[in-house]
Length: 459
Image 1 (tube, one colour):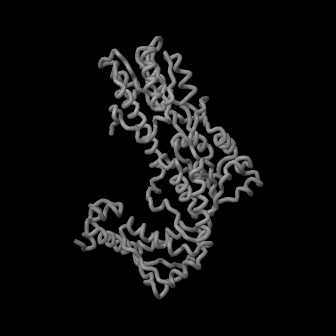
Image 2 (image 1 turned 135 degrees about the vertical axis):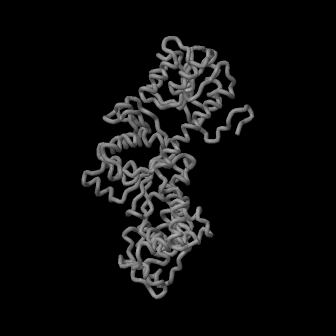
């Protein structure tokens, strides 16, 4: 979609947040670009040669570089080759008044994002920059989405419950979400700390930016610094290319540091500095980069005890607990279990393509009497297992035995082949007999499903 001047509409507000470096030895061209970009709220830096531009690139991150090819001293194409060899991954648009096929090919080989032939119109240069910003945004979003494929279902992003404890937690989240304050979420494993973090993000002014979750306990201590802050080429053995960190991918959004108590002490000091100064330095690099990121942290440990034991920095603890929210364990809000059960049955039956199961009052009473050491996550897993089996699974793990109001779990003695057959046929029935759709829901190919149906004597 274009605006009245033929320039691509800035739907995401990148212009007011981005920084552009113009490298050109023609004062008229530099003035033209500087005025046009500044009018859109963009921060503009300028240089008249590669030699002038080099310290600017080393000392500041630019979203786009507008680089003339014919410059005094080193040419723009030559410098771009060198930048790419050094691991520079930014967007670079080459400009020239003397274009031929060889020049265009050389520009592409050097890694140019776009190519502009002088003289060009305002719309041409702005659209080229817009494409670069859009490509950069899509790359960031793609990176984030790959990290959270398991959390794509929008139904899981809401906290469910009407108990007093959950109402208090929800009220606190609504109060702190619009603020830039760092939030600390406390609670046992499975209580929904990531869901709460997503709610903070979704209710904040950063909702249109990325939400980047990272489990500090799941990353090797020697790699977590590079994962968070990025690294330059050659920073350590195996670092063949420069790589941005998660703080970069979360810019304009929220970085969720789950299990923050597992973060190494040495890295805790660096995180404290980032929170206070809003600047990061990639591993092995000399350039500090400003970051616009809100941090939400979570832990299932007693951070006060961790501080007393010398395993967590006291200054970082006080820095992140400005807004502290505790999520109650499920055993302390058993009145929410019926609502949670209904939520998960409706959600998972649709995802799995299976019919809902019925819940008797006796079974519900047993579930409310259970202490749920795995909290809401354990309840969700129970519902998924029950949908697959076709009845509420009340096994000997503490959920209680099957009651008169529930089908007896005779299927537990059936063979795995029979359980598979029953599940596949339920999904096929839920898909209205459409084998392609049923195969998609089952995560298998249509040919595999047809082969199984043939073996079962199902047309």
